[in-house]
Amino acid sequence: MPFTMSHPAFAVPLRRLMPNLSVAGLVLGSMSPDLEYFVNMEARGTIGHQFIGFMLIGLPLCIALFFSYERVVRPMLSAFVPRLFHIKQFVRECYGQGYPLSLGGWLHFTAAAFIGYLTHMFMDAWTHGSGVFVEHLPGLTASTLGMPLFQLLQFAFSALGAFCIAWWALFGWMNWMAKHSSQKRSNKPTFAGNKREPWVWPWAILIGFITMIIKLLFSVDPGDLTLWFAAPFSAAALGIFGACLLGGAQQNGQFGAGLRLAGLWLALLGALKFELHIYVLHQIGISTTRLADWILTIWGFVAVMIGVSLRMNRIVNKFVRIGLKTVNNRTLS
Image (cartoon, rainbow, N blue to C red):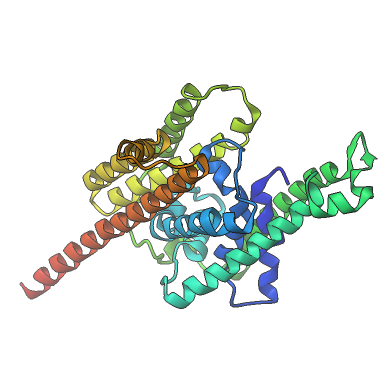
């Protein structure tokens, strides 16, 4: 289907059959064959839709994105939404707290990611010209409303998936509101305590805008539709992650450390984009194919995202340790 973000709607319901599956794994796995488009910032793929591609590209990206979300983005989610209709408190209570990344949790995540990948391939088989069902069922290539039926199904399933995801979010909020209708939410404590949330939207917009401009400046054809199908989403995701780095550091009194970390993160991503790692390999006499270069770039991206997320976690933990030490000293005195 043309809209990658609609795929989770056809994967997450499987959790009713297998409750131990990770929802995050199903969500990311269902999008995994297309994730390389967003790293490349163009809808041009290599082996992402093959099983070997899932193992070498899709699964590592799923792990990196999940790790980044749990360690950096999730704690700052409520900063991106308004207080209107108690949406901020809804996000804090329902999505603000993650869970420990244990070995068992990672195994459930990996299994769910693979099942999500299979659902992606199943949906593509009905909605792409090269799909297995399209090639073997002539009716899917018949003209319907001026286009092949499989192409019409692309748009229909994309719209249906997007609607289901939007309805799921709305239903979750409505259900939460109903359960809390008798309570005064303004006086109810939240996991964030009394700390004032930083402004994250200016950082997200700035980082996303700069990322998009750089992509357009160095693109061979800025008007290429494959670029516009992926680059805006990539720029937005990078903007949100960068804003969470800076906002999380500011919220914990470590803005300087967060700013340095964000600068290092952007510099490393830039080095990967301009293939400095490939240049170094060639300089020391190691020749590689273009596919190998791309896989190395993906792995580099994965390493950067996990490394930066771990460093951010240390910054936050350092602030917590300092705060606890201060409280203990005051108590003793």
